[in-house]
Image 1: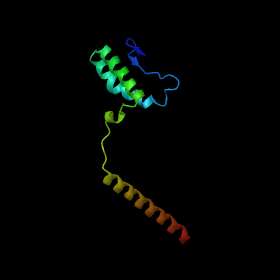
Image 2: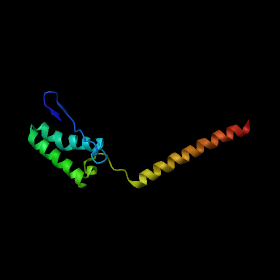
Image 3: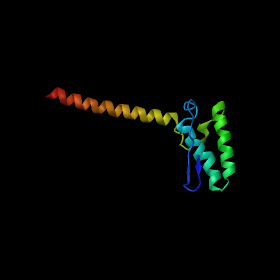
Image 4: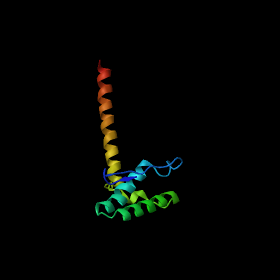
Length: 103
């Protein structure tokens, strides 16, 4: 539904489509496909692209991952961070257990 006077837009999924057209997917469609066209006052183009994308989602052809703006973290950096956290946790646990044994 589009309400130009209220400056609001949302996609309401029908019963049975919730598993395909999730809230996250509809948010991606609105923010990355429809709104950029609306900001250029291309309302018809935004609606057209948005509905085409909804049909792509239902056909299993839409890839929401290509719209993510998250920085990519290397696997090595992630492993290093996890190892560091684990080491720190073990060190703190040793301190606590050592303090208990001394009492």
